[in-house]
Amino acid sequence: MRILSGIQPSGILHAGNYFGMMKPSIELQDKGEALYFIADYHSMTSLFDAEQRRENTRRVALDFLACGLDPEKAIFFKQSDVPEHVELSWMLSTLCPMGLLERCHSFKDKTARGLTANHGLFAYPVLMAADILIYDAEVVPVGKDQKQHVEVTRDLAQKFNQAYGETFVIPDAQIREDAATVPGIDGQKMSKSYDNTIDIFGAEKAIKKRIMSIVMDSRTMEEPKPDAGENNAMHILKYVADEATYNDVLEKLKAGGFGYGHLKKALFENYWEFFAEARKRREELENNLDFVNEVLRKGAEKARSIASVVNKRARSACGLD
Ligand code: ADP
Ligand code: TRP
Image (cartoon, rainbow, N blue to C red):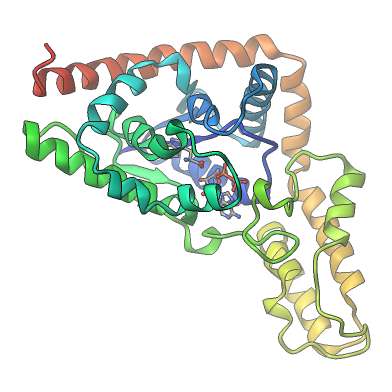
């Protein structure tokens, strides 16, 4: 089984990224041939600062490796080290109806929020399709917000196969029901665009502050809270605490005499502990950037050896040989 996913270096990684995409991807590295990449070409659609892109790219590399991506098991690389993605993107774009892209939620959301609609932002899903198809990927682990992009990928693969003969494997998105949409501190989907994130590797004080500002209802400490399983803080606690701890907090909230301050304190402690080992690994990696660069260099070499074969197949199918 060939598995592939990517993440943009467009900001600081947060718990939504971790539980929605990174953790499932890391678990899948034992289940098949996995390729994971830093989508730096994609970040160009919304980030226009070269130094910031370099810095974010370095951070994503450190974060992903610290969280458990094992370069002995998975191929880890930077998208722009494999320019074949862009060539395939062009081939696919010539078969992509405008309407397909006009219907994409992600594009509609970003423009609704005031991002200027450059052509790259509009064509974003076509490049993403190329990322996936150029590796004959079968499984794409992502959060729910990326589902539509994988559907566009399937559509484009089918269109290409119809026009030029069987060329591409049709991939499937893999979305974990338990982490499809991790809520942010305001209860909306956690996203860097909504300023509602809790970082994976933030400073202790900053993370505590974020957790303390999770929006709750106004019930007092004394009141029993029979619906305690439904609130934002409990949603996040479920990801970071073991079952016994989670159930203990749940029962106390239900019984009353246990307030949201207590809950948030428990959440912070469990959150901090959950990422403790990764935090230690990240510090080690930070002192060994040569290793990180070497991982990405070797990863790109391996990725490119796969991509060039599929690229050749695609070129030949459409008469570019
Ligand atoms: P953001 O919304 O912060 O910009 P990205 O769009 O860069 O995040 O997402 C990177 C990956 O993390 C994608 O696979 C996406 O589905 C996943 N992801 C992001 N936020 C969440 C969330 N709140 N819940 C689940 N998965 C998420
Ligand atoms: N669009 C994805 C995101 O914002 C990142 C991405 C780019 C991706 N190419 C991909 C994810 C290919 C999976 C497969 O999260």
